[in-house]
Length: 361
Image (tube, rainbow, N blue to C red; front, side, top):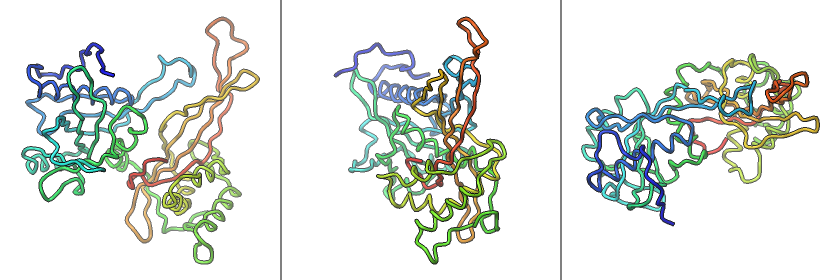
């Protein structure tokens, strides 16, 4: 079905008059970038043509924070800037595609080596975004990205590899992989260091010499559950089947399950030590109780830079699942009833290394 909706003002690229077909395609691709960023709750700032220097704009990473006092009032929900920024070079049009394969595109860019020097000099992550062009009467609906600071993104023939798995679309499942470009830029400098070569209250590694990885991980998990877990800021963290079942769920690749097992000792140390955390996303479902109260779920990330005995240091993120129960104040009257927080529970949910570009937590 052809999309014949009126073209919004954001479809007109700043500084460009849509007087040619190439200008229309370019303006539409920039507008598409802006629309996807807005769908993710982010901000997009376009750079003028005279000053772009191989960069078309800047994506500002934001995260949504609920107002605990007014959890149902969407006007009070805020999209707070995380400090993450990503420079973006946008390309659109079949003329940029040097070749197409079943899992990637090769994109040709004029003066690539000169622009690559500029991208590498940037203190921010830089992404190439290729937006599939659409004919008159339709908006762009597909885009893919590549990390322009990675040597793996370049070919010997002078093109840029854009993996088709790196989708740039409005769905929230596309947001996390793209946001990881900014992981080192906006988090690593301030991360707490955890040294796993030093002993702690729990074993610093799994005992896999006498038992297999899964059994060793289960032994560690039981010991962790028995001793309990407390975070300096979030308080008690429940270690039970919630986390184990999520990590070992049916359909999850074996390699990811094994990685989560190996990271369990680091996860325990991170929870016990790190004082900072961030809201990753809100759960899709709410739960209501017979007494009229209700629960909202969100997912928290607690990160640290972990020093390993036998490999390079890496960022490790622990995922927590939090349930917050709200209820109306029975003493308040009228339509503006006061909402109280009745309690909260936080569970260990998962652990992973963001630098490994995993698609799901």
